[in-house]
Structure formats: C-alpha cells, structure tokens
Length: 411
Image 1 (tube, rainbow, N blue to C red):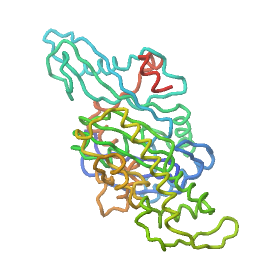
Image 2: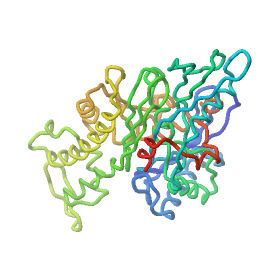
Image 3: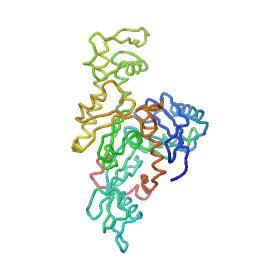
C-alpha cells in the first residue's frame, strides 16, 4: 500500500458545499480540516449558476485549507444529481494458458469484455464507474475473486454508473476555477456506502437510501458489490419549498421550521401544538398548527418513499435475503423518518452515520456528511487495492454498442 497521503474531498450539493482535508493511509483516517457553506447555484445536484457555486466552493475549500494548514491539490469529488443511472452488464473471455489457471490479466480482460457494449452510449452520458459485481467460471457463478482458479471460460459481471457529461464537466470546471484539480469523480451512492455500511451489510444484502437536498439516491448491495443504483430528483429541498408554499413563508424560515419542528408523524403531534411562523413579505410572526407543518412534511416524504419502493419492486428482491435498509443524508434525521421508511418499505431500517470514517465523538459524525467522508474511505480503498478500483471505460468502447434492453435504462 502507498504511504500516508493528504486527500481533499469535496461535495457540491443542493443544500451545502463541504470540503474535507484528511490524511489517508494504513491507519485510521485523520481529518486535518474541514469547511462548510450553504450551497448556492445548485439545483437537484446540478450546477445552474457557476458564479455562485464557485464562490461557495472557494469559501468552503479555503476554510478547510486554513484549518488543515495544507493546500488543496487533487480532489475527490462527489457527483450526484438526477441524471445518475446504473445498469448491469457482463462479458466472457476464454482462458488461454496451458494449465487453464486464471490470472489477473484474465480478470482484466473479462471486465473489459463486459464493457464491449453493442450500441452507442449517448453523447451526453459519461461513465463514472465500472464496478465489479462478481465472476463466473465455466458456469459456476457468485465468485468474488477468480484469480488462481482453474477454468476455460471466465465471465465478469459489472455495474456501470453513468451521469450526464454536462453535470460532471461543470463540477470539474468549478474546481478548476479555484485551482483545485478534480482527481476522481465518485457517485453519491458509492461514496455514502463507503461511509455508513458495514462489511456484513454489503455482503449479505442491504438497501442504501441517501436523502440529500436535491435528490434521493438509492443503491442495492449484495455479495459486497452494488447490483442496482438509481437517483430521484426529489429531496429535502422539496420539503422546504412545500413548507414555504403551504405556510406562506420564506425559504429560510421554512428550512428552520423543518429542522426544529418538522416530523413525518403528524398523528403523534398534539392538537394544540403551535409553531411561530414569519409571514412572507410582512415579517410578522403568526402561530400556526404544528400538525399542519408535519402533514406537509409527511406528504413529500411519503412521495420519496413511494418512488423508492416502486424502484425496488421492479428488482423483485426478496426482503428475507436483505439485512434491511440504511437511511442516510440530511433528510434521514427528520423526526419519525426511520419508522416511516420501515413501514413503507417493509424491512428493518437504521439511520446511517459515517462511522467507518469518524467516531461518534467527532463533529462530523452526522448523516449529512456521509458522502463527503465516504470519499476518504473510497480513496483509502483505491490505495489499498488498486486492482479492485473501478475501471474507466476505454475510449474505444465509449462509442461501442450495448444490448437493446440496456438502451431503455439510459435513454
């Protein structure tokens, strides 16, 4: 493994821009400095105002650099947004050596064969990850590492994560504008999973749900790998807007009310419970029913869960073969969120804190930091197991073709 390395992790989200500088190596990850700023210029995980986004990013990174007493060079960056799509593919190669022993080169050839798509990837799409799921040797499936085994045919099963090229390019451009090079782009689900999921959960089966400001991101893990991923263009910011419209107040006041008094269980709120709300345009404060506030929160949260449940139902997963779901991201801490998710999804649900990166005593031990801290764990894994890192799509394959059933998933 490489020696200790200084890593910068950046999350440009809808609700916040976070930057963390840490020392990553063989031992525990050591955070040197962090910066956080409310996000501007980002909607549903996509940059819509470059100037505002760059200024927020600059302030967050400078704050982290000042605390760490170290400059930012290359940065690992979270890439999310509603355009993230996941799909599965596979490829088979013949083992050609005399003893039919599978080598690391054979594994690489099989993974590349899985990327030999048979229709053009749309011009506006970009591959973020080609993640190894499992392998098969002469029809025997479910093999995690075939190297050293004997066989004639090796099949690689991979999960490919795509995003819109414009989304990724604009994030890279924003980093360039503050003289920070984007070293690696990592999908939201991949980063959050590194921070909050245990090894057993990933191996036995788990659903990761990251409710952020602008999107809700889902990934299903089995046998240590992602087998399904999807993003939905709805998140905590939608709840805030609903409150603002329903109670006729400002977005900042709606965000305050959501955090201080919001709940997805209005039936557990007393009939006489009131909240003070600043009225739009007048500045006057008025006492309104907290039940009404919570009914607004519940309606949007239920919509998010319904979309997730419908997505999972298409996979025809047997919940008995899953350990449950892990709810993370800022939206996971709404009062009653875990219980409501458990009821809607029909499986056990826990709240995911980034315990794989920081201890419970840390200021960063919070679900809203799961993605940015997960980047540090991802960077450590890349250093420890470079041959296990996701493979970039070869340029020659970028215009290759894929199976017709795949086309529907990315159109």
